[in-house]
Structure formats: structure tokens, C-alpha cells
Image (cartoon, rainbow, N blue to C red; front, side, top):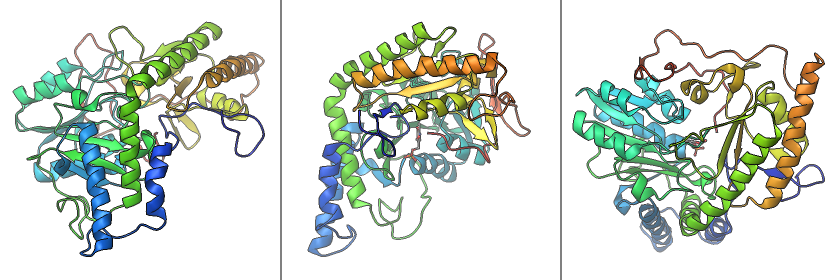
Length: 433
Ligand code: PLP
């Protein structure tokens, strides 16, 4: 456990899904490019050629880790740009109906809404509803976006099965998968094999922030978002972030090399943490851990009745535990997350959401500290509520239920599924991580 930056005492970092610390291999790879090495990879002299070679070597690594040809890799400024480029770039090149799952990150949801797209339901475990997809697939569909694993509850999605269905029912449609959260944990060549477009982000795997990639397999219809110097096959103009790109490649390579060991080690830590919290906090339930639903090993997501996430996060931060609710605040009103709502979890439970995400630096001491701090903080908040006091960091009003808005489109789930939740207008909300 590192020291806290602004006060003495250890810090327990349980927010790796938001960003994970820079790996030493990434830092070492970047350092020369922050010092004596420089150069614009698009130039014609030896300094430029050296930079171009570094970018090309990084491209080879990304291709190897994702399972594509080096020429398919387009470097971007991060996952958000990669997702936007996929949705808007395909829509511009091949107009038609755009579909995405109801639990996508806003980097997908917002551009899908912009192009008039619709969402497809998930079931109560947070798993994409292939039955609802089947009903929604008409020959007019041009794009399906289905994330590889969800950023809030960690549930792994059936990308290969969905892609197979798309091929059969809507053969002109392109499949995009946001693999931003999955890249640290899953063997991408296997899990994203059916996708035409794949988004990854460096800072979720231990590389620097502000760099990512969109893999666009050969023949995928795509128009650029950014016009200019014509870099990246004319699909993403802008001088390359050489230091960021080599750092991302080093981080991806390190994560892939350590994957099997890390999955077992971090998965065991996560299970000890989740089991300990479920035993110590009456009424707490674990989200995304249902039978038959595969989860990322680093993610534990709990819903804790009788408390509000914002107040809990405030107390945890005070005690040196960094966690997240992965939900959004709009002008003081805490709104239930669209992911939980899509899983049929109402505001009574969803307002007490707690995402604890572990990563490559997580250790037993983090779990021990969290198991001491979190149940005590919950008990304190519940005690304050029993006494009628206003809990820390929160007003007295309850969470605002997620309401459908005019103009939202939705593809209904099969009758047995929980109610489908429409996508929301996100203006004014806090960013999702
Ligand atoms: N997609 C998912 C699933 C994410 O979790 C995130 C980041 O939180 C993004 C996309 C955005 O990536 P970036 O932060 O690199 O823009």
C-alpha cells in the first residue's frame, strides 16, 4: 500500500477500473521518448524514421495482443475516441440502424444516441440478451456495439455469439466491441474474434493516460473523425503520441504476459474481499456474480441497502480507501446507474452501489484494510440514518429514479426479462469511469 499523497497513513486503491497505475515496463519504454528521443514519425529523415520505427514496433505488439494484423491498428487518444470513431465512422460510411447494448459506456451510448440508434436489453445478470438482439436484427442494421466486459459490474458479454447472429441475420452490419475493461484480463484474440472493430485504452492496462487504439479489420467501412495530415491510413490524422504509444504497447505486453497468474491472484483477492463484505454487512448483495455470468477477476460490485454511495465514498476516502460508485450525479441528485437500471435493479438498492476494482498492484493488505474500513463506514451511515441525521456528503433527498425521456428508442427484451430501460440524456452528469 503506498502512502497517501496529502496525509500520513496507507492508501488502499480499489479503483483500478477507473485507471490503474503505470507499469514499470511502460514507464521504462516511455522515458527515452520524454528525453533524448523525439521526432515526428511522419517525417523523412533519420530522427523521424526512428520515431516511426518505434510506432511500428508498438503496432506489432498491439496487433499481437488483440489478435489482428498490424495494419488494422489505428492509434487514438484513448478509448473514448476509439469508440466514437467506431460508431460515427461506420455510420458515416454505411448509414443504417445502429444498435448497442443497454449497458455500454457513455463513449458508445452517446454517439449511438447522436446517430439515432437504439439499445438492446441485458438480463438481470447483466448479460446481453441475444433473444432481443435476434428480434432487433433487420437487414437495415449497419452496426452493433457490444462491449467485451462491463465497466461497472464486470460482467463479460457474449461478443462471439452476438457477432455470429449478426452475420446470419444482418450480413451488412459491422460489429464493434469496446474491450477497454477486458484488455487486462481476457485473451482478446479469443473473445473479440468475431468483432470487426475493437477499442482499447492504455491507462486501463497500466500504460499512460490519453492514448488508445481502434482495431479496424480490413474491409470494415469507416470514415475518419479527424481530418488533417492523413496519418493512420488517412483514418486518424494528427501527429502520433510516440511516448504514449510505446508505453501502451509495453503495458499491453506486460499485462498479457502476466495474465494467467494475475487472474488467479487478483481473483482470489477479489473473492476474499467480496465474501468478507457480504458476511460483515447485513443485507448487502453482490451484483454481476450470478450463476452462469462470467466476470472480470478484478471487479467486485455490491449494492448496500440503507446507505447512499456518495456518503459511503466520502467516508472511505477519509479512511484512505479509494473506491467508486460508477454512477452519476446530476446537479446534486444522485441518479441510479443505467447499467444497474438495465439489470432491473431499482434505486432502493442501486443508490447504495459500490464498485471495488482491483488490479496488478493489489495486495492482501488492501483487502485487510478495506475489510476493516468498509463495514464500519456502512454501520456508521446506517446508525446516522437511524438517528435521523443527514449522512455525510449527501442531502436528504433520495436518488432520482431513471426516467425514460422523449425520443429515446429501445428494443424490448423478451417477456421473461426485467423491464428495458431507455437510454438517458446525460448532459450535466458526472463522467463515467
Ligand atoms: N469504455 C469503457 C468500458 C471504459 O471503462 C472507459 C473508461 O472509463 C472508456 C471506454 C473510455 O476510455 P478512455 O478513458 O481511454 O477515454
